[in-house]
Amino acid sequence: LHGDLATVNMAFEPDHPGCLTLIDWGLATAGPAAFDVGRLLAGCAQLFGPTDRHVTERLDTLVATYRDVAGASYDEAGLRIGLLSGLTWLGWNKALDIVEHDDPAVRERERVALAWWLRQAELALATGLV
Image (cartoon, rainbow, N blue to C red; front, side, top):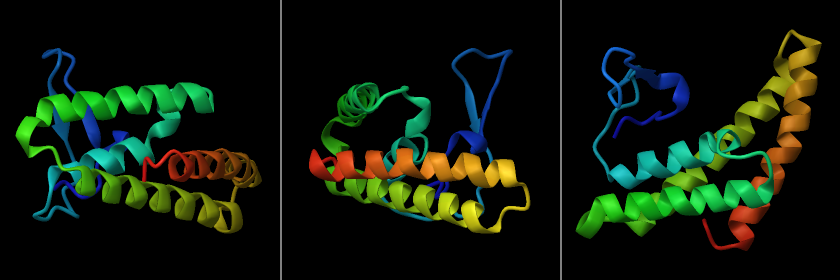
């Protein structure tokens, strides 16, 4: 496991289309790859679409793609744990920024983003995604 799979830890290589370098391996450990997939999907879901419906559709597509690529090694439990972990991590960081960030504009942005996160978490729980 990378342990902190998020877009901030990805470097796309412009000279090699389709190549990706993962950086910041400080939380690397052994475990199911599905955990990283779930963590990425939950922690970066806001990048997948502007509305609840679009996010859900894109997440469903990404999970289906992962299921196809993983084949026999597909790990539903690991994916769900990763999704739950990513949702928790994202909400926690938003809450911290709301109360601790020095910039009032960032505090307000994260306050608004926390409302979005709460809707996503509720949707994920209601649909059985996690």
